Length: 259
Image (spheres, rainbow, N blue to C red):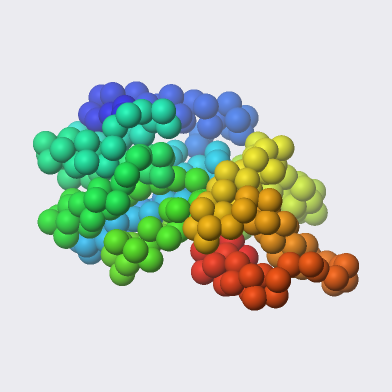
């Protein structure tokens, strides 16, 4: 667990802004659309919801959240570590000592045994804390909203990145050239495209396999079959059990992986 608040948080935000300007080649940083929603309805709101910010790796979840911070002295940013020994109960013990109003927990799905912690986040929000958690879009994170945080979350999927937003963030004119660039790179996600197979395995197939107790290879076959059917009009006859295909499709639709 790494924590930042006050001047330490300001320095972190400054470093991230420099990195963003290096990436875009611009002399200023322009906000994603979801940043203002976080500013108004999470940090500036009063509703007892836990905000869940999800999306692909490097899609701008963390930077967008930190851009929305207006009072770093009253904001605590917690970065979970993938190999840490801390569990959800350790986080609860720590959070009971926190005085800041705004609490951000990054890479939430990395926290071991976070079931009790999820309940406690809801309690924090109901008691006036403004809570936001982030993580790569995985079934584990998506189904958190259907479990202990049901009816207590407000989810923002940062993968929803329009052409208009792309042009504004990168300061490009509306033109055929910029439209082609947007379509070819996927906007902010050009850095992720090379690692898409690993992302699908870690964030989707492995989670799905564990969720419905399905062999990993069978889960992988079903996922790719569903993806193929989404873009291809004709395909060879499937050997997958129809009931299993329908079951998995329903799960992926509910988690907003397919529509």
